Structures are given as structure tokens and as C-alpha cells.
Length: 326
Image (cartoon, rainbow, N blue to C red; front, side, top):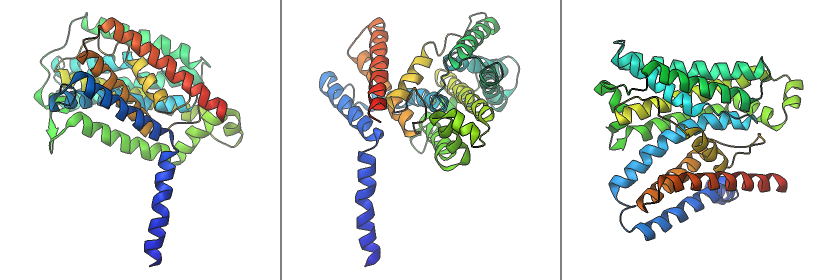
């Protein structure tokens, strides 16, 4: 009897906690957006092919946004993720198509490339004391330039079928990019919410000096979050190359804005100290649904960029309003 009473007492508390969280408002916005698009596009939005396409595409953005979220929680920013996305895909593609390293070798090389750029960002910020904005702006140009230099601007084809399965396949009827996102979300959810490292990430974002005084190795944690951001950007780039069946130096252009917007829409603060793993996933879902809706409504790609800019400004504005109420 007591167990049943405790269950009934706990259930409302869980619901109330979710209802009062930032994620609840984001879910409401996502549902409302889907409802509007269903009305305005007819059956096109709800078609199975279209929904699968939306899920696949936002999975790549969400994976990258999870890494960006770790950086933003520490009050940093990573502008290089879009270029790392392309560079990792190119390196992985070259390893498979030109260097004969196979699918596993290509994945390792591509992820290592992303991790290396992430580590470089962390070292520039912590050891050279460069502002994250400046450091990652520089590596953004370096990674993009290397991508063009390695390929000469030509796409890399002849990728193995085993690699393409990562972006095009299904497991138990579920598209592999969605499964990849779920795995990444679980791993980094545990890291951020259930580990000492996660508590230190939040501590640095909340008050860096207080965290340093309390014994947190601030530089190590910052290097780690930038490294993870680079790694996940690289993984997303590889998965996208697998989806398209081609690696290209033009991939990921502007994706850093998508990742940042997804994180802020998801409830993280540009001032640091707040955010969770669910946030960037929901934010990426909103961005993906919005982009898809604009395409279905035959909105020009140029206007789509304008809408993205408006969404980013609104997201940061709401973030400022949230911060002022605390």
C-alpha cells in the first residue's frame, strides 16, 4: 500500500519538474510548429518519406550541437564545427577512397581529424589565452582551407558500401543516423549529468574563478570540452558523407550557426552554466522541421538564411530574458 502511495506521489512531481523545465516549452513549440506545417503543406509534411528525411537530417545537426552545447555551458563558443565537419569527412573519405584504409580506417582517421582540431581549439583558448571566438574563428578558416587544399575542390566518390550504411542504412527499421544520435546522446548525457566531469563543466560556466579556487582543473576541462566538440563535429561530418555517398570540401557551410542556434533554442545560456543534452536535440529538431517546412512551402534558399538569422536573434533575446529573471 505504501509503495503504491509513494508511486502516486512521485509521478506528479516528475511531471511538474518536466513542465517547469525549459525542455517542456521547447516541446510545445515543436508540436505547434509541426501542427502549422501539417495545415499549410497538407499531407506533404506528414508523409513517411519526408519525416524520415527530417529525422535523418536533424540527427547530424544534433550530434554536432551536443558538442557545441558542452562548450557553451562553459561560457565558450566554437565557430569551427562546420569546417571541422567538412574536414573530417574529407580526411575519412580520402582514407577510404585513396589510401585503401577501408571503412574502419576512414572512420578512425576522420574522427581523429576532428579530435585534433578540437584539441587545438582547447589549447589555443587555455594556453595562448585567446578568446574562444577568435581561436575558433581562426581554426574555422584553417579547417576549411585544408579541406579545399586536400581535394582541390573536387568531391571524393567511391566510398565503400559499409561506410554508406552508417548514413543510409536501417537497424530494426530505424534509420542508422537516428540510432547514432541516440548512442551519442546517452554517452554524453551520462558524461554531463552523472559524472564528476559534468559537474565541473557546469561549475566553470557558473563561475570560473570559484571553480578554480575549489580545485577544479579549469584548463583541462576546457580542453576536454573543445576536444569533444571537435570529435562530434567530425563524427557528424562522416555520417553526412555516408548519407550522401560523397565527401566534399563544401560540406557543413553555415552549420556552426545551426549548431549554436540549436543549443540556445534548447535552453542553454550564452553566459554559461546552464544547459542539458536534451536541449540541443530538441533545438536541432525545431531547426530541422523549420527548414523542411520552408522547403515544402517553396521558400527561396536566400530567404531561408534570413529566417535562420531571425531565429538566432530571437533565441539569444529569449536567453537574455531568461537570464534577467534569475
